[in-house]
Length: 218
Image (cartoon, rainbow, N blue to C red; front, side, top):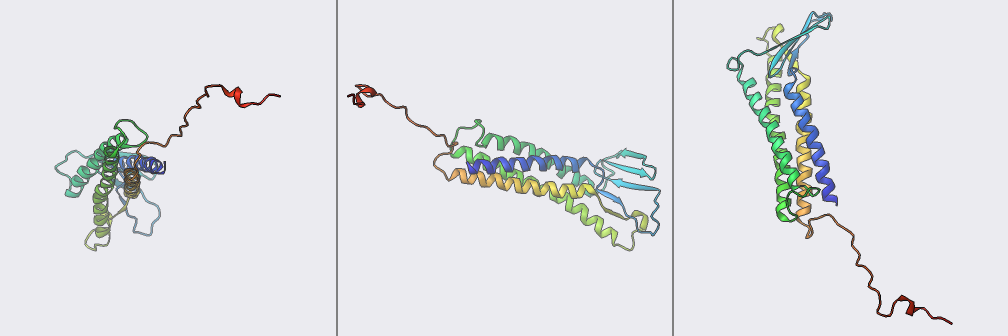
C-alpha cells in the first residue's frame, strides 16, 4: 500500500509540474526590461517570450505581438521552442504510460510487467524535467551574460522573467514526481504480490450435527 501511495503522490506532482511547464512555455515573460536608471517612473516595460513580445504602458495598457517569422528568430529561441514543446508532449506520453502501470488501474495485469511500465513512466517524467531545464538555463545564461556585458546598451539589457522561475519549479516537480513514481514501482516490483492487499476470511462451515449440539441442556 505504501508503494501505491508513492506512485499517486508522484503522479500528482508530475501533473502539477506539467501544467506549470505549459504555463511557462506560453507566458511571454522570459525576458523583462531591466531598470538601471535612478528614475522610478517608467513609460513602458517590455516582455519577451518564445512566441510573442509585449509592451506594457505605465497606464496599464498592454499590447502584444506574435513573432512574424520563425526563421528570423535567434537560435536560442528556436531551440527553446523545440525543447519546451517536446518536453510537454513527452510528459503527455509519460502520463498515459504511468497510468497504465499504476497499481490503482487495471490496464495491465498485476505482475512484474506492470511494475516495469510504471517505472518507465516515472523515468519519462524525470527525463521531461531534465529536457525542460536545458532551454531555461540557456536563456538565463544569455540574459545574465548580456546584463553584465558593458558593450550592450542599457536599453537592450533584460532581467530574468517570471516564466523562467515557473519553468524551474515545474522542472523540479517533474523530476521529483518521476523519482517518486520510480520508487513506488521499484518497491512494488520487489513484492511477491503486486496487487492491493485485500483482507479475506473464509466462511464458517456448519457442523454436521449443528451448532445446537454444542449446548448442554439441563
